[in-house]
Amino acid sequence: MLKRVSRAVTLGGFDQVDALTIGGASPVLIQTMWKDRLSFVDLENQAGEAILERIAALKRMGCALLRFAVPDLEAAEVLGHLAQMVSMPLVADIHFDYKIALRCLDFPIAKIRINPGNIGSRERVEAVLSKAAVKNRPIRIGVNAGSLPLDLRGKTDSGSLSQAEALVEAAERELAIFREFDFSNVLVSMKASSVADTIRANRLLAERTDAPLHIGVTEAGPLIAGVVRNTAALMALLSEGIGDTIRVSLSDTMEREVIAGREILACAIDSGGAMAGGNFAEGSGTAAERAGPRGPGVRIVSCPRCGRNSFDTHGFTERWQPYLYALDKNITVAVMGCAVNGPGEARHADLGITGAGNKVLLFRHGKVIRTIDAGEADMVVAADRAFREELDRL
Ligand code: SF4
Image 1 (spheres, rainbow, N blue to C red):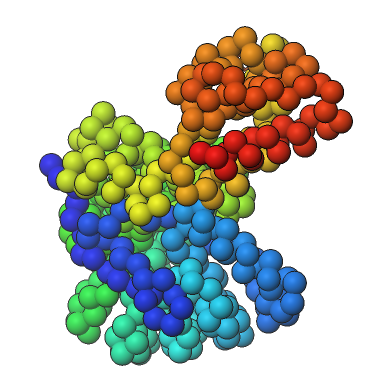
Image 2 (tube, protein in one colour):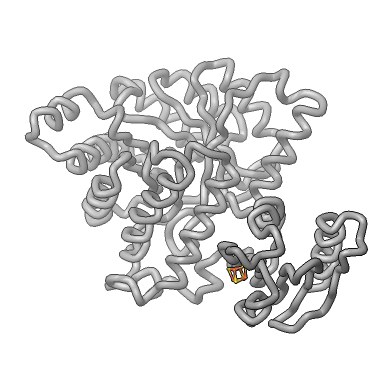
């Protein structure tokens, strides 16, 4: 069994917006979603610069697409303005009002997501599709278990249709309308907060359409619960070759969603043939190709810490994580709590740091290359500086 072959959908590539291909032979891409409402005031002055820098940092971390909720026409104007300022392809997430989708299509917004459960009549969908076709913008049909069309919700309530079947039915109905209007620039997502429903729905639809699939568990919970639930669902689907973009939905920051996505993809690539079916490894190029143009990036190995520790591994990894994940280097970094096992345990690390009594040691491939003595006024600052210097040398 080979990796599912989906139709390639291209987006962006106009104005200053990056061009992207989703599906086809492209690597699986990571998305996240902006967590707050933006206003024009937010985009001005220093606050605006901070927003642009945060988007640039997300891109450096490996986020390929950034989605924004667009609840009204004013939000459409704000997103349209922002879309003219960034190279990251932006996605407008629209519920209820098709006129918001029409307005978003006036701007360099790369993709529109609509929800068949609430976007309204065929005529409204047709209006959006006609304009999207003229503008050459793809549309994602985003079905959500929490907002299924009314009749399907009734069937799941009565037990005549499973949640997964209802998700697929909602997506297929919309796909049929898109086909009638000869609109093939389409992607699909079907999300549920249940791992089992997410897996079942995507397996079912993957056999019935070649549209690229965006996958993830929605409303997955806080950090730990959300990562575990998404990992369970995404690893199952990715191992079967299903999934062209992913989002790890968390009640946590966008940066953590992207990091979680990176780690899940790395695990999927790494486990490859070891998982049932092993299809992520087959038919999808080398590990480097599957990881995308920026490569697999930095792999952090860090010890859990125990009573022997003399280095705050938790604080160090927390402090350095965003920087390391934004680096375009394919290296392993080890952060270890003590010299007893530190360098030895991390022999394969390109760069490591560990406590050693009242000293901090930096090591490369298990060999100590630098020592920071207790004489330093601020050991944390000195250790960070030395770590950064050695990192830059790699
Ligand atoms: S490296 Fe040292 S501190 Fe960390 S878990 Fe191993 S023995 Fe404990």
